[in-house]
Length: 129
Length: 494
Image (cartoon, rainbow over all chains, first blue to last red; front, side, top):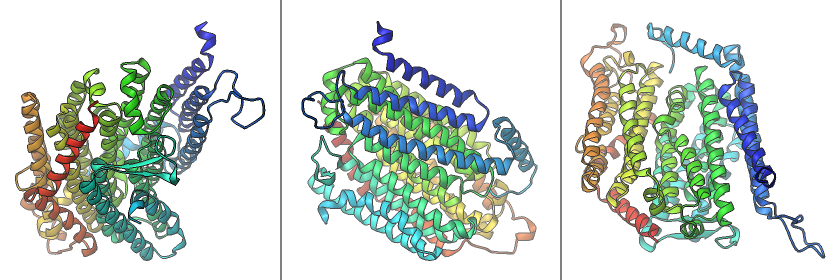
């Protein structure tokens, strides 16, 4: 019963955990960004589900329609979707520049290059900070 | 005009940001940005004056009244933080021209000022608004702009640091969004004052607790509170010097304001500090941050990175103040908010001068700096002394209030640890003083005196002088923060 009546929220939790896990566990930067997207999407679904009123229609004045869903969370999430797209675009732009600078989009390779660079600096090599 | 001040504070830099793109020359854009920053400073001074004499101002955006429309609500707390943010921004941008011209490619300079104003507008928006969803929107405006600003650094590691910060920051902001969603589900409102009125009736509902947990963790990520601070040192070290100075002086302060606003005003001290072991958590994490970050700072060879770790430690002190939770302790936090902005603003601008002349700021570039760049080195030394908290500097004032508050509240062990933590700061500041004044410069450079350009040196010294001035004449900050902390605790009591 609990499973079916709160179906949307179970989906939200599942997506949120999948997204977070991807962000943490994946070494590939593009996959991290996709994980971040799934994570954010779960929150969008959460808001939209919260605004739904059982049996309510779209909040438009129509004759014979008295029950409306709450439009406010939907409008809020429109803003959040825009923010999410901006974040994704910026993240992908950064990934492109990282690929050019490091020659890789794998976290492992980048960290190896970082350590190499740091070791070089401690040996007295001057680099701008 | 005067009644529209709250919105002017935010809309001015927000509109100015895209306008930058219409001006083709970097120097003109700089002048324009400086003008906007000074105008924002003037607005915040007027706001603080008005709030101090007549009490909180409520501004209904677009004429829609409070619980339905978005409300901008300025009380003493945000008027104070607005003043800090816009004041520091004016000083930093005044110093920006030569440093930015040296550190950024010509084609990117105009874009830098655009991003800077966007970030500035976002920070001011977070502070000015009285609507929790509006907080999220402005948080993302300032964060997105700051990711791009940080990525402007010359070193390729700036890109990687910025990407890591983007991941952490987005998770933090999304956590805050989840928390806001829970609050809205429970109360049906997004207005802070309205939320504060409705939440006590819900008591310790699990949903409200979950909302608080999500918002708390989200803000702490932005704040770089001890175990969540890992993004900060890299982000600050590789960014352009001016960006570091701006973000170090303002961004963490705004996150701390959010923490105060949510724990004290929205959820209420009763709920946040009484029904949860938050007191112990904040004091514990704060002190752990002070010690862990200070200890790591001692071993850094990159001085920007060292001061970045020191920022994490200073955030620890401010959080301890919130944890103790008495009026004096909150006052100590608010004082340190102001004082730390002055210290780190001055220090990072001085480092910008060093990077301008030497091209780097590793510990070996400090050798003999007292002779080759006497004014810059003196600024760093005084800023460092203020960071330690010696008498006659602002650092002493806030530490004094914090220690007094801890003893008054019966946390004598906190008072001792705060003092011991300050001693760690002596260790890392001393390394700079020793290298600068006691070691001789590398031979090739021994004879050349090459001070940072006056445009950079003047704002640095303005902030350093403020460190000394407000360390002696404490009337203004003490009066405002005393009233603000009284108002916070008084206003939050049911």
